[in-house]
Each structure stands twice: as C-alpha cells, then as structure tokens.
Image (cartoon, rainbow, N blue to C red; front, side, top):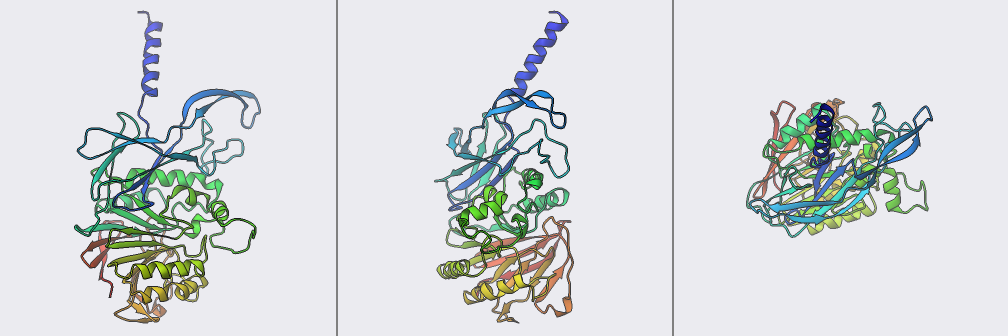
Length: 448
C-alpha cells in the first residue's frame, strides 16, 4: 500500500468515526409540566441537524461568491429511556422548535462580542414529556445508541423520605454560577427553584449568546456526583423581559400569549411550565405545593393573578408545605419599602400569604441574602410569614441599604448563596450556603 493510499484510507476511517460520534446536546434541561411523581419533561438542544448541503452565497464583508454548508433536516426529537436496572430501552418521541433567534453572520448577530460563528447556524429545542413513570425511582435516558447515559429521579407520592430542594435567584453563568451549581448538586436536591433573572438577556436577540453560556453552565454543573441531572423550576424576572415590567395597553389589539412571546421570547420558549400564562402551581403528592408567581413582568401582580393566587392557596389549605417563589421582593434589602414594585407585592399578595398562614415565601431580585422576622400586618409576629432569599446565586452582589430602618431584617448579608430546603414531616429546615460551601444561616418553620 503506497503512502497516498494509506493516507486516503486513514482519512476515510477518521471521517467515518467523526460522523458516527454519539450526539452530545448543547444544552439539557429537566423540569415538569405535570405530576413530578410520575412524569418528567426533558428538553435538549441541538446545533447540528441531519444531512449537509453546500449552497451558493456571498461572503460576509466581501460579497464574493462562496459555497457554505447548511443542514438539510432538523435532528429527530427522539430519546430512549428505561428504569434503572432494566436492560431494554423504550423510545419516546417529542416535538422540536427553533431557538427564538438564529445566529446571523451577515447581520452581525453574534455572541456578545465573539466573532462570527462558522458555519452560520441556528439551534433547535427538542422536548419530550415522559409519563406513567414509577414514583421515587431513578431512570436513565440517552439520545443515541451507545451515547452517554443520563439519569433523573421522580419524586415520592408521600413524604416517606426527606425531600430536598435548592432555592435562589439571579443566576447568571460562568465560574461562580457553576461553582454554586456544583455545591448545590453535592447536597443531592430533588430539584431546584430559580426565581428569575436567569441569563440576563432582557429578551434581546443581540444577547443570544448569553443563553448559550447559561445552558452550557447548567449542563456542566447542575449534576450530582452520580450523574443525576437535577430538574429546574423557574420563574420570570425583569431580565427575562424586554422593558423588564408589564406595561398594559402598549399594543391593545395584540393577543396576550403573542405579547408574552414577543416580550420574553427566550423564557417563554425554553421553560416548559405546568401551565401558563406565566404563573403556575405544581403539586408534589399530598405534601408539597410550589407556586411560581410573576412579580409584574409579563402579567400584572393584581387582578387575575391575585385572584388565581387566592383560589390556589385556598385549595391547598391542608397541604403541609406550600412555598410561593417570585422575583421582586415585598421586603427587600436594597430598595426601600416605598419602591412601587415592592409596594404592589405587599398590597396584593402578602395579605393572601397571611390569610392562608404560610410559613415561608421565597423572594429575589436584590442580589443579597435575607431572612426576615415572621411578619403579620406589617409587624413582627411569631405566627407571621418569613421571607427568604433576595437572589444572589451567581450574579454580582449589590449591598444592603438603610439597614437601621429595615425593621423586618432578622439576618442579612451581601454574598452569593442558595438555600437548601429539607422537608421531613410537617417541619421544613432551611440552610443558607455561600460560595465556600459553608452554612451561614439556618431556619426552621412549619405552617401555623
């Protein structure tokens, strides 16, 4: 065999191996649209499609004839799954839809200062909902025969074991976010609640690359040491929405769903919800309800949302653990009580939290840590509601203002953190962790 022929054979084998390489998604997100004890929704993102075609085009900046590669078909939205211990795989098919915006080399749409991508490409979101699963069970899934095996765990129907979740907001991406993700994952939470301000994209197509980095951080770091991918429940924040906050009547003839998608194209596409239009409730058996609220970004705080919240809390009056989570705080560490967005939270929602005797509510947005005294009727009261959080999972810290006049602050500090919640029986335990992995605050509560 001469040298040229040996090189040709080697090149062919190398090319065949590259084409046969198992598919590796550019992003993976697990969440729920329905019962967390028997279902799981799996999103994954693909950059490459199936089949390549060379098409005639003009070069960027030079307008000279060129041939560029494009994919001819979208990758199929299929995966295989099985309960751990089983040998056979089951196939599940879902649906796909494109990212809200596509990288555009000609229009200079790029990754926040990165050079133009090659080849020019869009990304695809694939979504499958698995149903009729066993409760409190570990499942495996993969995207290719012979590809990497991922894991998830369903929740128990009753509080037969300790259930854990991590809560926080103002997430970001990169070094500190990934570190916080790994610390949270090391405590084996069943899921995570993120209360808004995720990739800091503001719904803008020019910041498309921030979502690339967000999902890359998520894929690498929100995974347990055993390889279990941790599901995420997310609420909307001001940095998910063009303009930040709901402005009624801007386009009076526009349908509400169309308006939300236009103003928050990424959030509305990337996060499958247990319902819409942006505020939702998810019930975990008979022991836990997580209420995801919209603090005035795509929906008004009052009106329909407040009425829905009243009814939702009424129906869960006997559930031992009920936790609302939202972005803008009613009792903040940075902004004053007179802040107009905080004021409407206290006017519309706080009376409902007190009416239904909730123990703890999660707030974010102010990039600090806080734990309030129990509050009822705007006074410290042992039977009142404690507000936790203020949001600084991976984002920069802002600092606490006017501390001496913020009578409601029991514990406050300006540092990155998440809150690990442990449910056992009627009591909930809360531990606040910093970036060193140390616990710096603890709290216990139960519904009065």
